[in-house]
Image (cartoon, rainbow over all chains, first blue to last red; front, side, top):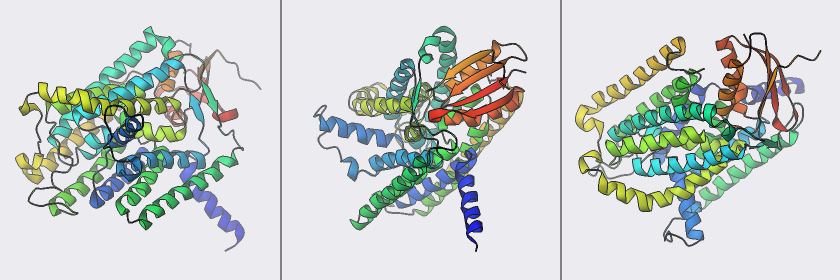
Length: 404
Length: 78
């Protein structure tokens, strides 16, 4: 093969991966497949667990709130997964020459912190976030996850109304001097590509080290985290966009993409659960009850509502915040700071109070197949997904609920 | 030839969804045939904007990459 042809092939591949964003459905299906892989080797994907791991380690470091027993981030598959999602996105942003440190006006930074804090409270109260509670929880056939999803929708709609109100009545919040550093102008910025390659190699070296020391699950989570960050950045895989856009621009691509991803996760999880694939005591139903928490129904609904408010105000859900950090969005760095600082405090002080206030019959484990059988539970989830698909398609055509 | 510009909207540093919200609001205040200059840095907005213009009938008449990751769109109001 001539040198010219070789270059042509590489150029075509580069353009395919980095010239434009991928369709959301491509990213969502890939993220869904990785979620199934994560469950098959250990546990379904959780987003909020990363912030919780980081936050506990921070308080352990400054010796506050008695988190001495917290597992080190280096030994935590969730703590490492979160870091690798940020790095994977950083790699994708660099290779596509779209990395820059983007600093918004102060009002937006405050919204980032408030949004991150609300996400922390929502995720700890509801036992799940946009990833663990929704993207993993619903396909895990958890009744509580469906309550949490309803809460996410209501919270998103309320927060969208707030954002429009804020634009009309407090326009100063999102106005002011914004800055951008280290970005690449057209035809320049080759350093970004090279840095991207170097960071990608470093990520693989870290994974190799974990394999060498026998920590295979974390090693795989490092690789999967890197891929998730990369895929999410390239496809704008963000759950808050899927929930929010029908009520803003009316665009349905985000929602349809997430629905496609959920279908992959649904069938993968059901196969793992029904066939009891992976370690776990069958008598205790360890695999079957994975990601079925005692949050049905009020606890899930309440937590989902607060999380929905938070992710919309922050402009990033649990995963959207992580990959936008990798892209250099400083607002989302501040959102992550709020999330990690408040998450352990909420677990320690707010959750015990909530557990005492909510009656037991409104915060129990509800595994849908126990009531509907596996066929009925899968049919229910498929019907919900179809209803969502129908709604966003109809809304995009009619503009009934969209604002602009 | 330099295009005429009726209003400039600075969205540098802002992340999704604020740039699109501000853009929609700014265009509402303009007349048909007016040109809005938008400066931004959010990569997502670069993908969202052409799609949204297709849907709403507004048109992008020019797109530039400026220094340090800043992009510039000139949008003609329908």
